Every structure is written in structure tokens, then in C-alpha cells.
Length: 345
Image (tube, rainbow, N blue to C red; front, side):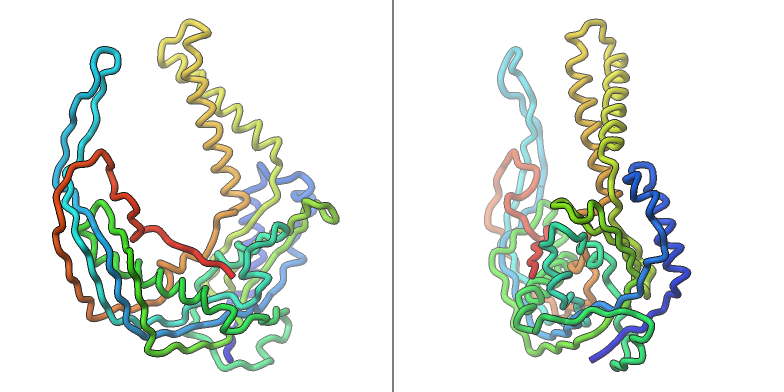
């Protein structure tokens, strides 16, 4: 139905991808460093469904407000310790609103949308969303000249569950402004979204894409992608890792941390090195996780709950205080107003 033309020129995309990879060379796979070239960067039109929805939403649950706290001593002698007790008011919470969602963007290539493949970093392509879809034009095959494109192989019925989930989660996050006073959280137990109408548009959206196959022909073959949103310039990717070098660097940082802690604690014996060593081990593990996240971006995704264009109106609230109690928990158990539930194809 529609196409969003390329805005970024190939030369700029090549530079962005080159800069992105260049900033990640230290722990990159040696073979990848030798073979990296921007010659195989392609302009690709990926298929998406753009969904508009109007309706009415109803959320019912419970919320908690902290009214105070105090500490108390428990145990005695060597077992004596202090614990914090929180004073809490619990409320029943109800919100209703009219809602309008504009251009919810959902991948309509099953290969990309499922994100189940162990051989491709498809999440990278998802992570460069959103696009400025308000600038889409009527589909014309001439826009595809000089670029490649992937075919849509899903229909509305295939994507409806994903769309329903993203619409509901976007509404839930949009309602958070109305429940800010519940500083311990809100647990929504009953959610209902009644749709007055929904409009689906099939669209091609533009991406500059670099790909590299690690361990080709082997069981652990993995295709890494670095993608650039050809409208917003958002760039994100996955780079093959030199795991040995990354592990060694993390171990060295951990040992250095342990030594600093050992000296700071005035350690003089082998036994007194145990606690610093544990601390160093933890720091080393954190460093490896941070390095891995920067190079592989396995958790990268489109944060649709924040980035979806949504308008809520006529918000109605109906809250009632249920009880006052004390607890050792610093947050409400089961609160879900700030956590996102992601449903995949």
C-alpha cells in the first residue's frame, strides 16, 4: 500500500557502519577485522504492517503508596541486625480511557519477526525502529529501483496477536502518568481493550544493511547484521567476538579489582584475600557482560511500549483505599505497570 523512500545516501550509511564497527575492534574477531568491508552494504526495503487503532481501554488492579518507614533490630549478639519496615497504603485502582494509536510498526516478514533463529541476529533489524512513517507515500515500484526488498509472507491473522499485545502494552505505559502517586507500583489484574476500528497498511520501510557470516558452513554459523535506519540514521549491530581476549580482559580487571580491595581492607594474609577475590570475580563478570552487550546487542529491540505514537483521552479514575499494613518488601509484589510483556510471532 505504501513505501517510505530512502533518505540517507549510501556513502553516509557506509561511514556510519564503518564508524560503528571501528569503535568495536578491540574485542572483535580477528578474521572479521581482516575481512570487514563496506562493499557489501545493501539498501533493503523491509515489509511492515502499519496499524492504526481507535478504541476504549479499561484497566483494573491494585496499587500501593509508601507512607513511611522505620528500622528495627532483630536477633541478638552476633546475629543482631537491622531491617527496614515499610508502612503502606493499598488501593484498588481503576482507569478507563479513549485511545488512538497511529502507525504501530510490526514486521511482516516471518523470518525477521519471529526472532527465533539461532543463525541470524534478526533482532538488530527490529531495534532500529521506529521510522517517520507519516512521510510514507503511495506504493510505486519505481522507488525500489536500485535496492533489494524482502517479500511480506504474513497476513493480518498471523500478526493479530502481536499487534494486540503491543497496543495493550503501549496503552499501559501511556497510563503510567495517571498512577504516579503509587510509588511502590501498580498491579493490573484485569485489562480490556475494546476496538472501535483498526486499519492495516502494508508498507516497505528502508534500511541500509551490512551482513557478515561467522563460521560459514558450520553448526555454529551466525550471520551478524549492522543496520542503519535510512530515515532517522539510528545505527545498531552485532559484531563477532574474540571471546578469548574478552575473557582475559575481564579476568585481569577482576584480579586488579581484587588486589585494590585487598589493599584497601588492609589484608595481610591469604585468608583475608577471599572477600576481595569474590568482589573481583563479580566485577570481572559484570565487565564481560558489558563488553558482550556492546558488541553483540542480543537484547536490542524496538521499545514499542514507549515509541508507539499513542494518544489517550478522557482518562477516568476510580480509586479506593483498601487497607494499611507494614511489610519488609521495598516494592509492591507483582507490580507490572512498568514491565513490558513481549509477544513474538
